[in-house]
Length: 526
Image (cartoon, rainbow, N blue to C red; front, side, top):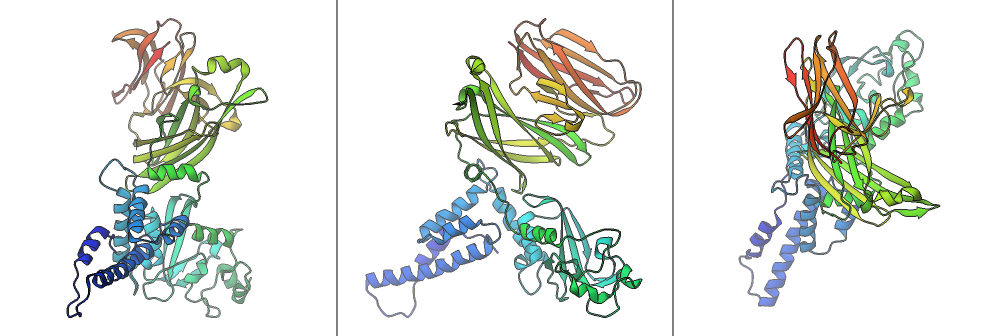
C-alpha cells in the first residue's frame, strides 16, 4: 500500500507514446491519449478509495466521491480528505496521514495470511484504532481454562488473540475484541462468539464445561442456545450478553456518530472563525498513576452572545463540540454539549461587562495532545474555533508534586450525592476557575491546589506580592503525619489590596525530603 501521487502520475502518462501504432491525426492522437489517461487514473483512484482509505472514509464522503466526474475533482477531494484530518494544519507534516500509512505497513507486515495484512480483521482494527493497550495471545492454541462466563472447565482451542482497548471513542471503555484462527491458516477472524475458538465443539463429551462435567447439563444443549452462541452454561450467575458483544464488534468497525455535524466539519476543515471569541483554560489533577483529570474551562463574554428574550428572561444558547487527539492523529476524547445562559431583565444592564463559563472534565493519560474546539451561538449564528496543544503532566508515585494552581471565582463544597459529578466539580469541591484572573476588590480570591506525597512536618505558606514586594503572608500548621494528597482550599479577602496586578505563590516544603514546590499564578484586582 502506498499513497497516491497524482501529479507525478499525470506528468508521466501524458508523455507516453504508443510504439508501432499507425499514424494518427493530431485530434485523434489527443483523444487516444486522453482515453488512456482516464483508464489509468480510474484504476489509481479505485485503489485509493477501495484500499488506502477503505476503512476510514465516512459514508457521506464516499457518497460525495461517487458524484465526482473528473480527475481534477477527485484530486481536489483527496487533498481535502487528508487536510480535514490533519491535527496540526500549520505545519508541513500531516501526522494523521503518516500514522495511517504506518498502520497499513504494520498490518501488512504482521497480519498476512494468504491475503494482504491490511485486508485481515486484525489489520482493519489496527488501522482504525491503532495498537491495543493489551494483547492476550494464544498462537498455538491447545489447553485453555475458560472464564466463568464461558462455563469454566478446560477446553482445547484454536489459535486466538484478545485485544483490549481502555477506550474506543464511540464504542466504550474496556473494550475486548477476540480474533480466532479456526482454519489454522494464520487468518484470525474477528468474532463476537467466544465458542468459535473451541476446537472440540463438535466432539461429543469432549471439552466439557464444569456443569457439563458434573452431569448438570448436556453438551448437546449448547446447540439450542437462543443467543446465537454455542457456549455452555455459565457459572456463578455470570452471563454473556450476545447483543452487547455484537454491538461492540459492529461499532468497533465504524467511526463514531457526532450530533453537531456542522461543528464537526469546522473542526475537521480547520477554518478559523473569530465571530464568537472563546477563551480556554486547562487544569490538571491526579486521578491514578496512569490517568490525569484534565479540566477544561471555556469563557464567553456576554457582549459577544446573542441573547433572545423569552417570557422576560434573556437566554443565550451555545453548542460546543470538542475533540482531543494524539500527535499521531488518534482521537482519544470527543465531547459535545449545549451551554445555556439565562439572565433576568434586572441584570441585563450589568451583563455586558460579565461573562459565562462552561466546564468539561476529561480523563487523559500523561502526554501531548491537540485540542480542537468549535462553538456556535444559536442566537446570532456566530461561530468560533480554537486549536491549541495540551501537555498532560505525569504524577509519579511517592514523589512530591502538585496539581494546577486554580484561582477561582467560586469555591464551595458540594452535597454528598454530587461528589465528582457536574460541571466544575473536583472531588468534594465545586470551583469555577477565573480564566482571565480578574477579581473585584470587594470580593474574595478562591485558591485551590492539590499536593501529593507529603511527609510529616511538611509546611505550606501563602504569599501575595506586587512588584516583588510581599503584601500578604500566611502559614499553615505543619503536618502531623504523612499524607498522599493534601487539598488546599482557601478564600482570601481582597479588600486590603489596592487595584492592580499581583502574584500569588504557594510554597510547599516537604518535612522529610526537604524538597520545595512553589506554584504561582497572576491575578488582577479591580
